Amino acid sequence: MAYHWHKIFEKEENESDYLRSGAIIQMHIKGEKICVTRTAEGIFAFNDRCPHNGASLSMGSCSPKNEVICPIHRYSFDLKTGKATSGGAFALRTYPLEFRTDGVYLGIKASWWEM
Image (tube, rainbow, N blue to C red; front, top):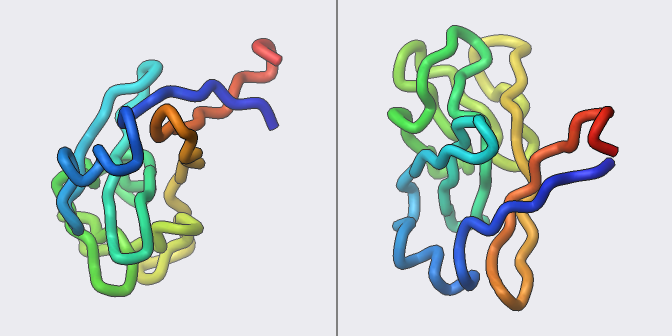
């Protein structure tokens, strides 16, 4: 799988300057709205659009179970896998993160014609 890698934080330590635990921030990367959050289990990135009804997950919240909760219908999704933990068989798109010496990078899958 090929990815385009985008630096989102200068250093892993810098993420705490921008992202308090449980907060969700929205980023616009390569035409996509992506949410980033930090929990006790680490940093996670996922699509801002709820797969159930399209609500903005950046307006949602994180649970102690390492889930993001949609602000509209309260559907929840596992931050590691993107799988629904309530409300149906929907899956949330998640993005890989790499922690390098020069920063934290988010990966967006390259389209088949870009490979």
